[in-house]
Length: 296
Ligand SMILES: [Zn+2]
Image (cartoon, rainbow, N blue to C red; front, side, top):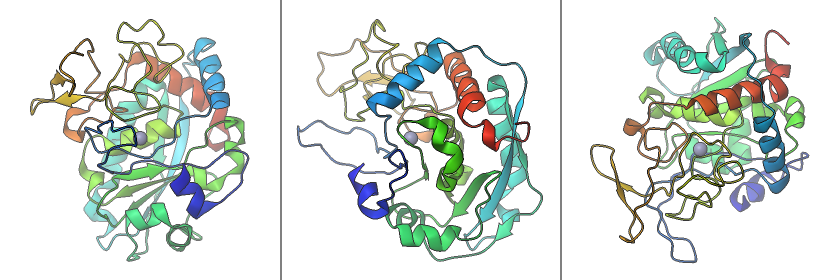
C-alpha cells in the first residue's frame, strides 16, 4: 500500500503491511465507503495462490499449537488497568476451535510513550521509538498504545511468500489502541490477520466492489477464499446490526456475514469466526507461523 511503502520503504521479500485505518472517503471511481476501513493489505496474486492452495489442501491439525504473548503497555495507564490476562483468556476461548492457544508471559512491560497508534502506523521512526528493544523474536508481541483519532489496531502482514515471516520481526507484532482493547472484536480481527485471514469482502472495502458473487459460486477464488463466509458487499446495516442493503437499492441479493470478526461492520456487531476461518487459521499457523510457536 502506498501509504505504508512511503514511510516504511522496507524491502523485505514481500511488501509490508498493516491494518486497521479508519478513513472515510470515496475512491476515485466514486464508490462509497460505508464503513470506516482498515488498511490491511490484501494478498498479492502470488499470495492469493499460496492461500488458495493452503486452504484447498488443508487438513486441520488437532494438536494444539501454542504461542507465547509478550505484552507491552505504552499507554499512561498501568497494565493492571487493562486486565490483560482476562483478555488473553477470552482470546483463548475465541481461538480454541482453530486449536490455537496463547500464553501470556508474566512480565508485562510498562513504558509510557506519548506516541499514538495513528502515528505509529504512519511513521517508521515513531514505530521504532515505541517498539525498540521491547519486541521479542520468540513471541507474539502485543502492544497496547495510546489511541489516536483513526485506528483501532494494526498488524503487519506480508502479501506473499508467507514462509518468510520467520525472518521479519515486525510481523510478529500487533498494535492495539488503549480504547479498542476493551471492545470484543479488534484484537480477534488483528490476530485473524496474523494467521493469514483476509477481510470478508476481499480486496476492496468500497461498497459493492467485492468480486465474490452473492451465490458463492466463485468463493474459492475471490473474497477471502473461504466459502462459509458469505459474499460481503460491505453495505449498510441498521442499529440492530442487520444488513439493509446497498446504496443502490436494486442490489439486495447479498446476505453478508455482519457478525464476522474479519468484516468491517461495527465492532459491536462482530462476534464470530466461521468453521472455515478456523480451519484456515489452523493451517496457516502450522505452515507459516510455527517458527513462533512454543511447540515448534
Ligand atoms: Zn483488517
